[in-house]
Image (cartoon, rainbow, N blue to C red; front, side, top):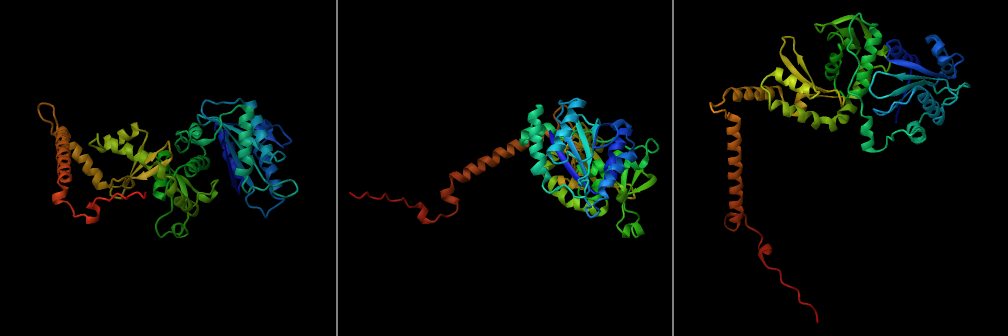
Length: 410
């Protein structure tokens, strides 16, 4: 089991996120602890009011919302009753047993997981200490629950692979199909929290996979000068449609200032996955001679290709998106400028068209020449080594003198 704790400032935003999953049929409210009404009879207003009454008792504390997810590996599917017991046991062990909390079972991924919503503000206005709660409270609780319920331990790298994030993301937005703000919020939250992007252009390359875009406004406009950011749904032609949603109104506040903080952190986070994508790109480039072949070849390897074009329609940048590891790279980061990419494809097309009548193409000839060149180089190196006393660099005479054996004292 893997436990993740996130602390926020908007209990309404956390509640909205989970309730929208329920309305879409992707989640169920399975437990309401500390509420005077049964879970299935609670309205949204009743849930929100219960939390807000506690939060109002200490308005000095801004981080007044807690969002916890408990994740189980693929193949491990505890029933609803067991999930209720695990949630209650976990909350008691981390010091939230007397707090009101809601437990949602999400159904939008291959692995079982539950989300818990609560507040650290107690009835008398004092707050539960959240400092180091992950290390000092959550980790011991997780280990105890794993042992008690016979769950798969999440310790160590090998075990952690079991809990690898599912590559399936949210459904692409479709204007008019669902409520615009909630659709955009769900997609933006999923992408900004889980993908490792390092610029607004990279973020938009990912968002466009889901028909959403982030927009700063026209250069020189009031929105642009004030560093504002909005999110919109894209139509089939790639144009913004509908009412744009302010970044500050989305749970998690993916504003430009907050995104820029992520850019710096993500530059380090995505380094370990670079060779993985680079290897797949190298393999596809060796076998293709067109952009169509490049795109289809990468898709077969579960890598999405996004082309960014200028106003004239010319390709300006190429981004490669790895949905499994949640990373994105500009082709230049992987050693391929636009010029070198074009050159490689053009070279492949030329060699493919110049096959000899007997079926042997230039690639084979080049391979033979390369092997012959390697042999010649090896022979030359060997020759130089054997003749080092004639043409090699002069050595200090001290190294050439034989060492005298020390006489042993009788």
